[in-house]
Length: 331
Image 1 (cartoon, rainbow, N blue to C red):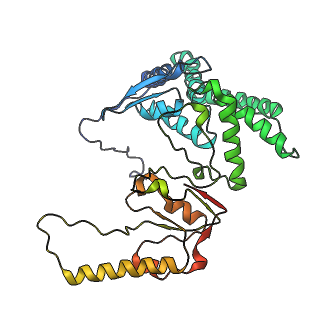
Image 2 (cartoon, one colour; image 1 turned 180 degrees about the vertical axis):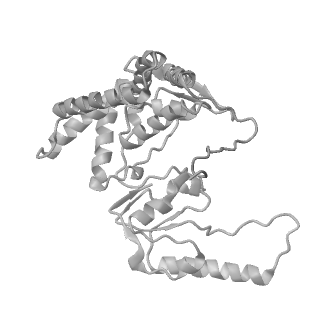
């Protein structure tokens, strides 16, 4: 019994600063409100953008709360909680990151006088919980259900929601155009809720109305080989094989030793491989070698049950039934 009553001993490394009590609570609140003041001016349709320059020289211009919170170099432990709140809101909802940070900071700001007067934080928490329940009930009363609505009615409501989220972005002037495009992209993936299947490819030049939705798979690739102009740009009902291996022979480095026997074997293997591909009447070949970081097609293929090749041996053994078909291919 005497051993159980001994005080707990906590060993901290040298240089650790410890503080507790009312003063530390007030310090935590001040740190959170200071972080909220950074993103406060980005809220709403008249919100301003922030230019953030990191230690690597990267420059980011954004008024998105989650983006700004991620790029801020916050070292205060309590203030980092606001960063986690913004990330959670962005992950679960995808919007309202600035609002949730400002609300959390405002709750702390309103609680600060009570903390200074000696009110225990648990008493404040017990007061906030009924208010939270009342707010949730009010939100449910204002909620609009889309159950039983037609597809056009659902798309109309979703377009309004998407346009609202774009009101504070750089593309606010064309929010109806992009809201319709976003809704079409979400409807295209169905009820799987796999938003990572939607990607954005940025191409310099042009105007915003040049943007378009590709109902398929798009690769940002420039065709610059000789004779490309004479090649067909459209294939109807093609067979496609996706590879992430190199088909061309690699160039030799300096002071390299040429092994003629190995060279002939490699050439024969490549020739045999191409013959096998022609034998199964493949019309279009997409080679992902060297572009894994840009395209990253492997997760996309696995999610859709599409076989992708990682070695010459596997390609030589591929069967025609393993190719996937598309109705139209435009290059």
